[in-house]
Length: 98
Image (cartoon, rainbow, N blue to C red; front, side, top):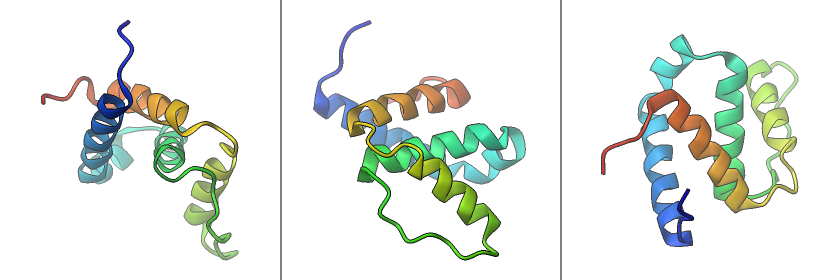
């Protein structure tokens, strides 16, 4: 496997983030919840680093699940999170055309 430069990794990451956002409703219908949470969490960790968001309210079940998945990645290197996000997204969508 050829190692990507940081710029190449960031470009590919952003392309897949956009693609995931554009297809999230389809993904919700066709992918397991755990996979969706992992994609979300690794995407956030890759983009923002550690979770500094306030905890969602008690009645926000989906928000709590997303928060927990993201918080569980605390300390993970952003580059590693981007690579894992890409692995997960490619598992769902395959290789995207340039």
